[in-house]
Length: 248
Ligand code: GLC
Ligand code: MG
Picture 1 (cartoon, rainbow, N blue to C red):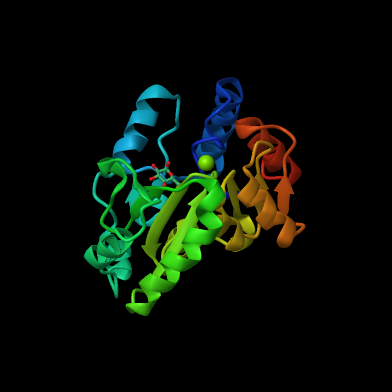
Picture 2 (cartoon, rainbow, N blue to C red):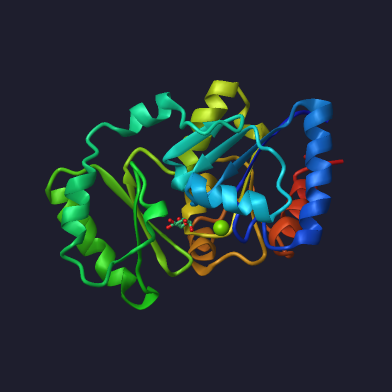
């Protein structure tokens, strides 16, 4: 058995089936202890909402947490985002201009203040109009020279981020730092903000309860190294880790 880099989304991926989570936690923490496997959580949540989830659920202490859809990286339980990553995202990022531009769109409903982050501006946007609103917003932002990326998840959340950030790019930043082989990396997710993880990984587990935008993406970009699990949440992760032979 070799060490691997385990990167997982939290809501509806790692978290959602408490019994399967307990079983997966046991196996992962044993693997980390014996082989030096690294555990990374990659969530859309701010650190504030992540701490709430930590208080509610039985989560392992990860080696790093990628928060706010990849715009913040916290190493070893630290409360301060990794400054090297923040520095990379600050180029051509003008948060005030973005906020001012979004004010022209009545359909964008701002998310709570805790989810508005230095490198992330977030709204609720209904699924029925998302396909129409997003290209308009994107083109208006780009016309002003703003270097941004729009990410839509679970048919309700719209995140605006610096173009060179997302969960996948943050994961690659850590992988390079830790010098882990891409073939020894596995990512797990269920929704739109996880697509970037799959796009940048050689092994991926899509949990059985994945939402339509990730399934659609998988359908359009089929790959043998992306495993579509039968089981939901942590049960699907266990299934995938066994499929790829990461666990004995
Ligand atoms: C989490 C975040 C939210 C974000 C969503 C999708 O729910 O709290 O701000 O929009 O993930 O990325
Ligand atoms: Mg999720």
